[in-house]
Amino acid sequence: MIRVADEGGLRTVTIDRPDKANSLTGEMLEALIEAVEGTPGGALVLTGAGKVFSAGADLEAAKAGLATSPLWERLSHAVAESDALTIAALNGTLAGGAFGMVLACDLRISVPDARFFYPVMKLGYLPQPSDPARLTALVGRGRARMILLAAQKIGAEEAVSWGLVDRLAEPEALLPEAAALCEAAIAATPETRAGIKAMCRGVTVPGAGSLLIGD
Image (cartoon, rainbow, N blue to C red; front, side, top):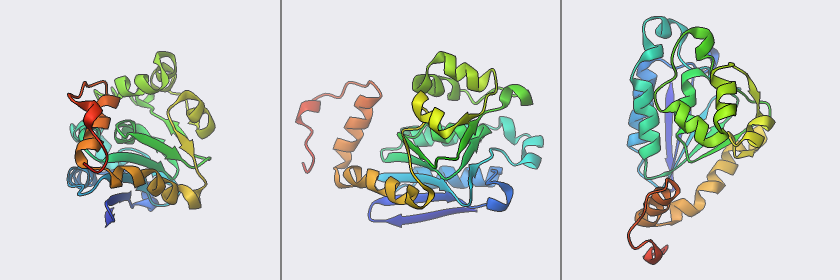
């Protein structure tokens, strides 16, 4: 239910359970972690099959404890720490625990009719530990509270205006757009890519001025 395709330095990981709105089981989370940590090239795209990116935890698995599993945090940490350029290509609605891996990506592009909601307040769970800080960094405190505390559903255009999503693309153009955004990162050296990613996180990189593509 997790498909992995590698081509020319780009790894595309697809959540493929469209009949269940791409809801995630523990086994699927473990497969996602393995796929992210094993990315062999310079870029990683996370996407979903069908019209929903992911509805979060599978209902039965959530009742059995998956909703509070540390696997969600392990997945978002793996995405955040990846040396590859990471892009969430959101083919549809994003909900619940699936937010973590998306917030941890470097970039997020979405189809225009996607919706975004994280209903932990309604469900009686706390969000995963790193999610509120990453969400706040993208959209600000007030808007993060709109999503987490007020449990509001956000449309794609509003998500772009808030900074939650970086660009919209029609469904047929979503993966080609993601691949195009990956071209520079794939062509760069690992040192250049890692250095720029670190600087974007606010980390000082010694000798940064001497890092040149092609060195």
